[in-house]
Image (cartoon, rainbow, N blue to C red; front, side, top):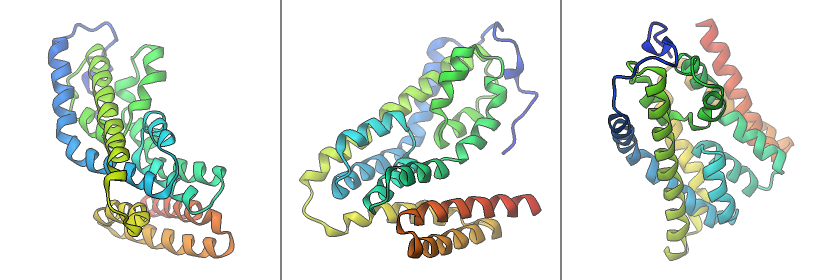
Length: 242
């Protein structure tokens, strides 16, 4: 991922803004509207999965707000449902969310000249959708980006949490479907397949799957964690040597 170090975000925090607050709010709303078709079905499905696996509706809502990461939350729920301990579930979610570190590094120029409170609070909103949206807003000054990012993150949080709640409410209305317990695995496959675009990603996925099966055979509660960790390490090694 490339960031333009010559971007106007490198200007001091007191730079004069050229975009009205209403325009920044509208830009954030339009960006969230553009990504919502992918966010809402994921959130609804996650909510249904929570009910199907019996992992707790309140936990799902709190996770949507605090974790604010669908793939990490889905991983944690799936690992807990498989009978693993809390530590294994949390570590699995952390490994899956490791990509956020890369997003944070790429967004560093936008945060560099921000107030301390924003640099502490703002990263909570770093997700795939906010990263992609903000990357296209290179003309914003630090003050403009701060306002835009706040609206962007809050609106995505509302859409995501609302989608999860909608799934929780819809689940009891659905007929008994035993295969709903497999939704977590199906979502992971759906997210993975489009990303198998080169040798590194394909090898990493194969190593991850093989490791997960091998570890699960010996230590059942650590299968997903072992597979995710192995996949990430292999991908990093292949990217570095290619």
